[in-house]
Length: 91
Length: 113
Length: 172
Image 1 (tube, chains in turn brown, blue, green):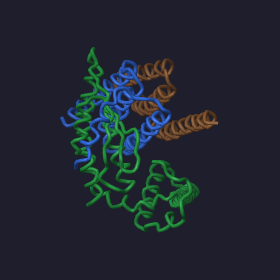
Image 2 (tube, chains in turn brown, green, purple):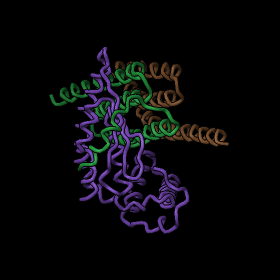
Image 3 (cartoon, chains in turn orange, cyan, green):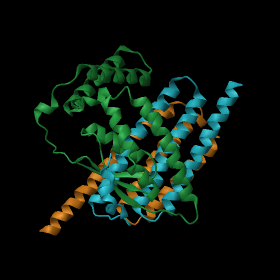
Image 4 (cartoon, chains in turn yellow, orange, brown):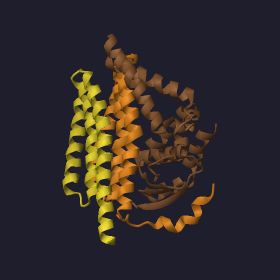
């Protein structure tokens, strides 16, 4: 069962990557990367059970922490750039 | 007997969770614009996370792993909406217009308690 | 949630003792469970980082929201209700995605939160985002801008059960 779930998660990660490559706007790409990160956490937890190695749960938690901070940092960066652009436009 | 029932329940949960993940991935490709794709992402983010983690918690029984799984699930469910909100709000502020915002005409209706 | 970055010192102070103790307890328990090693050095490091985290949370104004403690008892019932809501709406969204014609009708709706506090509005917004098919796009002065995947979900949002439940969570 774990193998089926991990394959489903892997397929979704590929689909998210396709969306990240296609995505017409920056936000589509960030959304796809966010989905990819969440799926990584899920995949790590499933792998912990698939191979019977509970250490992977700690990795999953660490990845979840990094993922959130990373997404917020990327968004902050884009918002900053957008604000700068606006300032340049108004000058 | 009880163990078998637990196994069956957790397998069903895991299978449905995997299906949710797949449907969310497909939706991310099929849906037409950014604001609708968020909904597909939130399907995989909440429902699939809940189902898969609860399925694994049932498998591992009363142990430290269950507690860790619960902590990871809680963390994902608490921070996921925040990240989604930040993303959607950034898109809105940058001027990305959602299509068909017919709800604005219903503005007066929603103030009733 | 646009807020001025510099907060006056009066809002940073007045830490509630029970809230601080609860945070310290949660931090200490999670340290002990996650480390699994009980050497004096590691326990000392754990105590140090718990205290540091609590101090940083205090500096960030975490304890300023006194409402946070008051809504803990009502949380399980609210989560149970939210769980059923999430299940129902995610089945709907899954059906929508899988139908070949994809009968979506994206709608923007403005909701008014019933609670005045920031905590209540954050809980409401997060609950709406958590259930598939509805996403909070903007929160400003007690008004939430929500993007819905279909008109039906918009209508059920406007019937106001979420806002009522979230407000009740805070009041008792």
